[in-house]
Image (tube, rainbow, N blue to C red; front, side, top):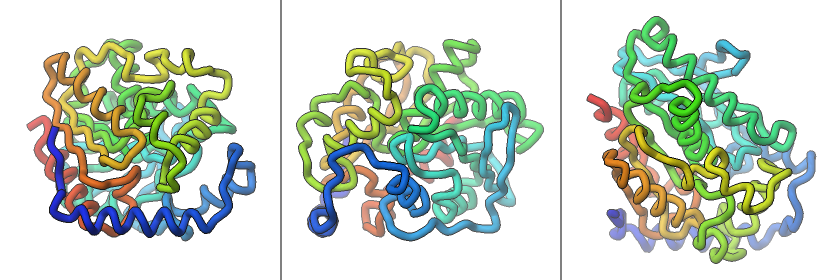
Length: 312
């Protein structure tokens, strides 16, 4: 484990304080969000109050199985990154990070394919994993013809990191596919939906995510399940056999309720013999890469460097 960015800890913690103070001025939501709240959240950027910026470089497509994806194609392609967005399986979209994904595509020379998976509560588990599995299988079969390369990578943020791991496990267990994806990049994901100690103990501090919000999203994503049922490896990959998965970079902040999820997953992943980079960002809250911080600039650079070199 590497603790990073301690030199800018003061800036990071100050931002957390401002964020929490602003959140405290808004009404708390004791129950799961209703349709009107969800519509507002889905219309805005993750972590913000404005619509996302759609770039003309993004191409909306419908692939086999009717799954929608958004594709970014740079001039030179050395690989394909299957990106899975975050948002608690309830909000977010494939076009919610156009600027970040287009920059990554250009700098890492990757075709980026972002999955527009179906969202809960309208489409609860297993709809989102099904869509991500379909997109991954399509890439395995068609990447060479579509993008001129079979070098495949997968990853995402928060719920997207969770879905990325489930996708790799489904490829292995349902289709006997291992080795097709050479690396996974996993940012602050929830890997135990029955709740790790850090999730249960984080409390109600009004950062981007806390104990209460995690429970709300789990109820929306897996409404028919209790805590024990959510320990099923097909739901919580922390309890899965991780043998045969590719190298991974796993990142989380010290002020994230999902801290233990990343720490525990990294240990279990590495125990299989796969290469794992674990980065723990000093003072960072959940979803920190959504905000204009020094740690965000550094993390996006580290992500780009990993995805540029992984599998070569």
